[in-house]
Image (tube, rainbow, N blue to C red):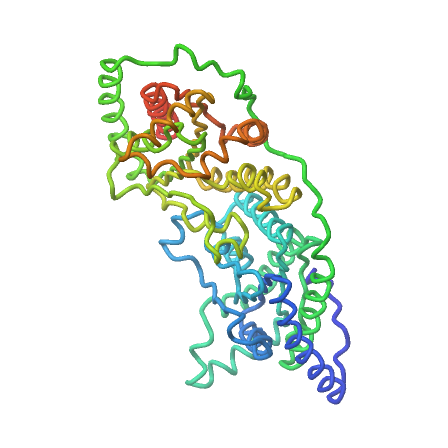
Length: 490
């Protein structure tokens, strides 16, 4: 892309001035439409060192109400950020619906910098490219406008700018060691940049190469491309997004009705003996997890009153409280609802060596949101693949992913609901919503079966916990957690 780029001819001063005025006014007017239509706009500005990325961003934002945009300079990841998945620091920066986010460098800079310095092998590079393609496609599928600009200058122009900046004491700080290295190895960097841009030039999020030799000309190119992108995105908002076929290997899982619940029980003596033994073992494994910096994500889904809370408690009793966090997931807050539905889960991921336990999770998209009409049919049908992709990111990061469905029958649920309602100290556990959901048991069962069948991947399979006897389910969960942790710790 960079090697063969042909730039449009720079207009004369009068035309440049008139077009700039028109583009600035157009963007100023579009921000109202963006707000009304709840269009989130993510603008990524990459480019050569000293090419004027900050200047391009500065010129674009001067036309936007400061309440509706944020700018984030994305430096190289900190040690803390390196303890999260590669995409985490970028996913957490996505804008709310109706607002702009401008990133000064980002995932391209991180990947290509590691590549040119020989810190990333081919296999890791290809894995990163797959992650980036999925990330950008997920955003555009969920209604985001993703605009990617690359500010391009020649080797000779970059050298001149570096020399001019270094010459003045007040501008010397603007030239980094990486800028100097880049210029000395311009040809090598050009090869890596060009390959990266070819690999990530998607129809829904294409690359736009900006001729950055002239400041005003660069501004005009960026503004005209951005306003055109916004115009097209607003026109396309009502279009349905194509559904993609799952590409990940799946494990065969029985339907809920095929899972026997009889004879799945333990005596009090068996339970106490096994509980103590397994919790001690898990405590030991947690210490090893922390030492080896292995992240763990445990997901609990299940019927109301199935015993998720008690099951989680028996897991956490064995863990060092400094090394885990339970994430109770309720209905999304307004600022969460205004972003991609997976955003709030990216925000809650553990660091390496830590454990995150989700009491309900992203799977609400294909259960309660599906059945209660909180998202469109296209949204929830698309979500199976998106959630598999999300979990693939966690798996590739090195996380152990353990997913539990806590299973009971309708009679058991009714008995537990009745007990809760008739016991004063348990009444807080039962709500009108629980009774309403119970009336939709059959519909939920269809949705859960489809969810499990389509998202039980080989790297993140579902485990069914038969919980008519809560003691049995707790012991089974502990055994599964221990077994999965031992696999990775070997």
